[in-house]
Image (cartoon, rainbow, N blue to C red; front, side):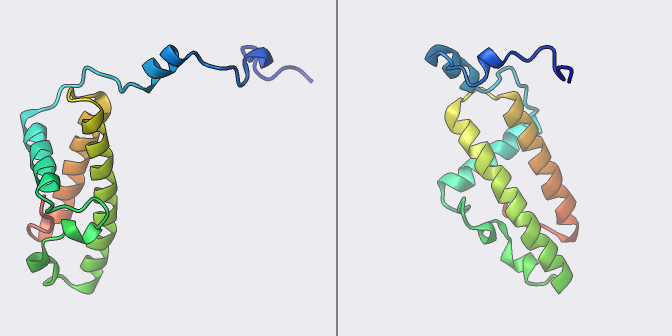
Length: 130
């Protein structure tokens, strides 16, 4: 049977990686450029995490209860599902901000997508505290 991948070298499979190379590989890509709107949104999120308005392990902490309680059951279910997704993204964003103060490509894309998801879900009003 012919070799399926001519670039595969079995001698390098599971080879150890030098610590300095592994350290370099673990660094997030730098050079991201965040818009003013996204930067303000990021600052809002980080502020709410620091003042404990948002609990990183409680999706209900994202909900604006005054708006949420007035929703029909179907929309409450959608809000609950999206709160879990939003909070997971917020945790990832928070972790990236703890690694580096310079915005990475990952951080820029996550903040932008988080803002878009939030905006899409808030057609019934200010559903989330962010």
